[in-house]
Structure formats: C-alpha cells, structure tokens
Length: 259
Image (cartoon, rainbow, N blue to C red; front, side, top):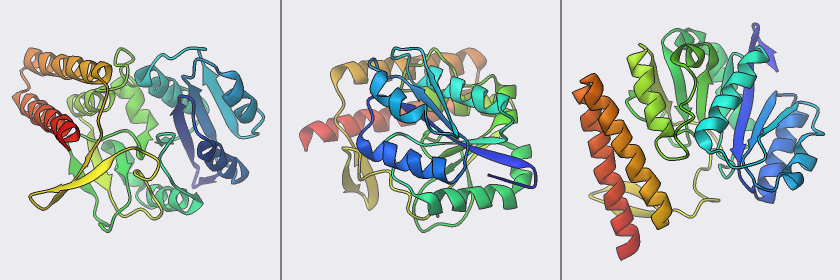
C-alpha cells in the first residue's frame, strides 16, 4: 500500500514464534502491505510453510540463528531493494493490529519531511502525541527510513542481540541523523506477550525481566564494546549515555532477582 509514491513495509526477525505472530502477519498480508520476515529459527520448516505462501511476503533465512544484527540488516536491505521507503519493525511478540499500522503509516505520509533528518522514529503505545528526539531507543516499533539507514551502513551484524539498537543510534548520530520517539499509537502492546514485570521506583514505571547468565554476559560484552567505541572516537556524551544505561540495566537485573 502506498501514498504519494511512498511505500511502507513491515518487518520481523523471528525465532520460534507463537501462533499469535502468524495471525498478525496474515492480517498484514491481507491488507496488501509488503511484508519481510527474517527467520532465525534452527528448525525453519514450520515458519517457512506458513509465511512463504503469503502473496505479499518475502521470507529470508540462513537456516540457523545468526542474531538480531544480521536479521535487521537483511530486512532493511531487502526492503530497500524492493523500492520501499521505510520499514516498520516489530518484535515477534509485540501486539498490534491494522489500526496501529494505519496510524503509523499515515503519520509517516503526513510528516514526510522527517525523512530528511531522521534515520528512525520509534513508535509505542501511550497518551503522548509529541514527537521527541532521543539518544537511545529500542528496535520494536521502529520505523526505519531506508535511504538514511543505507547511508549509515545498515545495522551492525556483529552484535547478536543486545546492543544492536544502541549501536545503531550511536552511528546515526555520527552520520548526522536523529532518532525520535512517538508514544501515542493506538493498540500498540509491547507487554502482554512478554515476560516483563512492571514495578514503580520513585514514581517512574520500570519494566524488568530476569535474564539468563548467558544473556547477561552478552549484554555486558556489548556494553563494553559500546564504551570502547565511544572512547576511541572521543565521544564522551555517548560514553556517559551508555554508562548510565548500563547501570540501569544492572540495577534492573538485581531487582528482578531480589523481587
């Protein structure tokens, strides 16, 4: 579906998705939107059989789990090669419906000037209807402006899961592009299908999830890579931003275990 020559694609990186995911992509396919799926599942047959027959879907896989960095890079590259202007990326367990996509699609069309200065706009649910510049943002809900992502050099394939989003934000800034967030999207649900717990600290709402030792090790390694890159480039602003994020991450893991 396009408007004024623009074309928005929807993308996912999946790993053994639940049935609810296939229900969502069936809706997307029926609505005529270009759909790109990168499958990191070791056993790809089940997903492949349900996705490949979809008329508007492009199914990508290497037959093994190569991580989020590779998946995001391949999604954006493929959508760009199919003449799409932007790719709206969701985690496989992020809830949404066609009204969610329509809202984001219309926002992108009405504010086409944002494509000149932003590499990504991160959408989420909430009551705010103000576009706000941010330094760091997560992947799910991100609308990637593909011509700018191509200039940045796509996502970093050497990051497996953690750090992919923050490294992308850092390189966006270095390339002269901005990241924004918009929190007024209807029917956007980033919590129901994810094992997060909601706690309140000093009046602020915080989502916590207890990760495995292996996942924590990967996160710590990714953060130290980000620290090193910021130090090497002499970017002390982002070094502080990464350090602050790292402390919050460790604090969240401590709370998840204590509670």
